[in-house]
Structures are given as structure tokens and as C-alpha cells.
Image 1: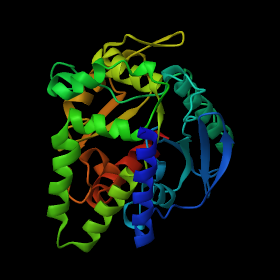
Image 2 (image 1 turned 180 degrees about the vertical axis):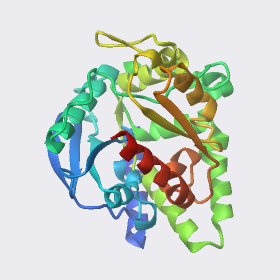
Image 3 (image 1 turned 180 degrees about the horizontal axis):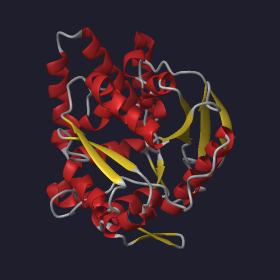
Image 4 (image 1 turned 60 degrees about the vertical axis):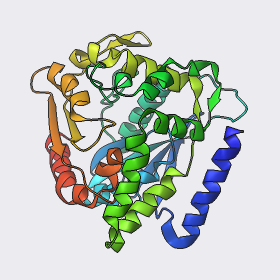
Length: 321
């Protein structure tokens, strides 16, 4: 039933595409693939500083390449980066998958290795788990903030073989309606009168309709381990034979927090950065903006983010490349 809702929402999204609001992605080629993922290489990927974007496994990755004026992909290419993107493929709707964090982490490791080989560089990845958003004190951020979110985490999603994207979207609205429902309505009102702002907002809404199913085990492990139990920030997250935490991450990290975002606020990131070895972690901030639909997408699709934040990110990347 929920799979049918996914189809209906995708049809709605196709309707917006017919109105000219679909993605206009840069050209790429597939250089590696596996059961769960495909690795994209963009023009000039074998030249310049190599960069791998690991897209979220829910919905399509074109949120990184939404439109000419708000495209991380385009700006990466303009800044002489050899760009690759890890694209996740949907699991079979009728089962046949039991993938969890370890499986997806392994896929990330394989993509990092393929990126390094394509760029003729050393493999900068020496473990099965690259990096996930760090969560701070779960008593101040996370399930305790919303009763609906607590119910989501308590649900034994690992018993469901494949979770339709529509179910995840519904659970997000239940957990935080002010973030996933009311703020979107406010955002479109604030965008009124600015045609470019309305265009970006409409494209974000089109992307949000492009539902993407996920393995139930993966969703359960993400909600339970890094989110509810705070294992990553506490240094108790075990993936394969490795115990992971901020003290184990000995490479430069730049985190950017949107101070208007309730999904991944500053207080969910700062404890991880503070616990890293001295000199390895940096935390930048920006205040969010309108026309982005959802504030946790603002860094990717916000015009002000592309004007003011991304130049700082590119400078950091080149300085640490």
C-alpha cells in the first residue's frame, strides 16, 4: 500500500517536471556500480583535487544539482574539483535485502577507493565507516524533543524488510511537524514576490516527492545507534571490527551548522567536533534563509549559502587537499 503511495507521489513530482521544475543535472558517467550504489564521475573528474559527495540514501541525489543558480555540483566543477558522487539505488520492493550500516559503510569505502584510483591519488580511507552526522546530548536534541520522534525510534523498523519513502516522510512529519510541515508553508509565504525564490522552493518540493525506499534494518540502526543511543559521539559505535568515535577520526573535518535548522542544529554537531583531537575539527555557522523549503537543505539549495558559505568551503578544501 505504502509502495503505491510512493508511486503516486512520484507521479505528482513528474507533473511538476512537466511544468519545467524537474532537475537539470550536469552530465556524468558511471565508473563503478554495485548492488546498492553507483559511482558518478563528472567532467574533469580525473583532474584537479578529487572530491567524493556521498548523497543521502533517501530520495534522489539531484538535490546536489537542483538548478543552475543553486547547484553544489556546478560550483564544485567551477572550483577545479575532480568531482565524484555516490548514488544509492533503491532496494527491491519485494525484499531480498538485509543491508545495514556496515553494508552501506562498506559501499562508501569502495567508492572512496574507486575515487582515489580514478584521480591517481592515495586511498584516504582506512576503515569501514567514513562519517555520519554527529549527535550531541540526546536529552537536549533528538527523540526527547518530540513525543512523535520517540515513537519513531521505539518502532522496531528492523522487522520491515523494505521501508517505502512515503512512510519515512510521514514519520518525519509526526516527529517534528513544525519542521517538516509548518515551516515549509511559512517558507513559501516568505518567498512570495521573488520569482527565483519561488522557483527554488518549487524544485525542492518536486525533489521531496521523489520518494526512495530504504532497507528497514538500515533505518532502524541509524535511528537507534547514532541517534537514540548517541554511540558515534560517545565513541561506542562499532562497525565491523572497528570502534568509532571522535577520538578515532584523525583527519581534517569542516562541519557547517545552519543555526535556523532544527534537524541538525549546532548543538548536535559541536560536541563531536570538540571531542576530536586538537586541530582536526572546525565548526562554521550560517543563519539559514528563505526559499529552501526545509532548513536542513539550505546549505545545498540556498542562494545565500552558495554566495557566502560555499566559497569558504572550497577554500578549506583546497587548503587541506
